[in-house]
Image (cartoon, rainbow, N blue to C red; front, top):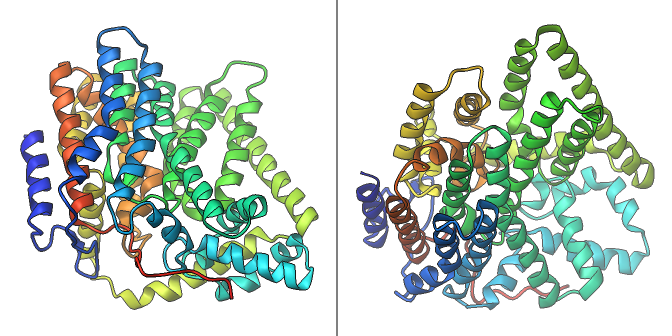
Length: 460
C-alpha cells in the first residue's frame, strides 16, 4: 500500500494532474525540469542509504547512521538547487529576492541606513516595531532574528554573493540537524533505538524539510525538538540540577521567539504533557511543574530584559505588530471555510510525501495496542497528533502548510518510526527509496520557491 501510494504521488506530479499541487487559492505551481533531477537526487541520498546499511550490519551505531543521514540532508538541499534555473546562482537570488526570504534585503537596507546616518544597530532594534510595516514581505511578519542573522554575515563578508551563500549554507546546516534532533527527541520520550532512527530517517527525505531551501523554516524543527527534550527532562529529572533543563527550555524558547512566533504552536503538547506528568506524581509532580515553569519563565524574561536594557528592543510590541500585519495581509485570501481544514491536511501530507499518512495511522494503531496513556511513547504520539489537529483547526496559516507546519512535523515522525522499526530492512529501504522518488518528482515538477532567474538585487 505504501509503495502504491508513493508511486502514485510521484506519477501525479510528473503528469501535472490538476488539484494535486495544493489548494487552488495557494498552489505550488507546475514546472518541468530535466530528468537529471532523479539521478542527482539519488546520488545525494547515497550517504543516507550507507548509514542504514551500516546500522543494519551492526557496523555503526544508530548515532553514526543518523550523522550520515544528516549529511544527505545537506547534500540534498544543494542537489535540488543546482538543477533549478539559474543553477548555483539560484542560492544567491533566493536570498536576495525581497519577495521570498526578504530578510537579507532588509539587512542590506538597514546596513546602508546605519552607514549613512551613523545610528547604531541597537537604536534600530529599539524602533523595530515601528519599522515593521515598511519592511519586505516575510520580514515584516517576524521578530528581528533573521534580519540580524544576515546582518552578521554582511558585517563579516560585506554586501554580495558571499554573505548570501554563507547565510544560506547556515540554514542548510540547521536543516541537517533536524534528523539527529528528531532521533534525540524520540529517544528522550522512550522510543527504542530502531524506532528513533526510523523516525529521524523518514523526516530526512521529506519534501518539507528539503525543498524549501533556503527560506529559513527548515531551521525550526531542530529547535522545536530541543524545546521538547529539555522540557521533558525538566519534569522528569531526579538530579539536584534539574533546574538547568528548565532554564535550557526557557533559553531555547527565547531564541525561537526571537526568530518566529511559530514556536508558540507547541503550547498544546507542552501544556497537556505537563498536566499529565503532574498527575502521575500528584503533589510532587505539581510542585515540579510549577517550579520548572517559574525557572523557564524567569530565564526567558531575564534574557529579554537584558536585550531590552542593551538595545531597547520591545518583544511584546513586536509580537502584536507582527500579528496585526499578518492578519491584515491574509484576510484578502478568502479561504473557503470549513473546507480549508481538509486542504491544510492535504498540504501537510504533500509536504510529508503522502506515504506518511498510512504510516502515521498504522503507527498510531500500533501505539494504541502496545502502550497505555501513562507511558511517554503513547503521550508523544497522541499529543503530537492532537497538537497538529489543533493547529489546523484554528486555521493558523493562510496556506503553505507544507512549509509553515515544519516545527510540528517531528512530532508526526513518532508513529512513523514506531511503525517502521519492526519492518524488515528491505521493506524499510523500499520506503526510503520511494521517498527519494517522490522528492525528485516533486522537485522536478513543482515550484516551492519562486525565484526570477532574471532578477538582480541592487543596493539603491
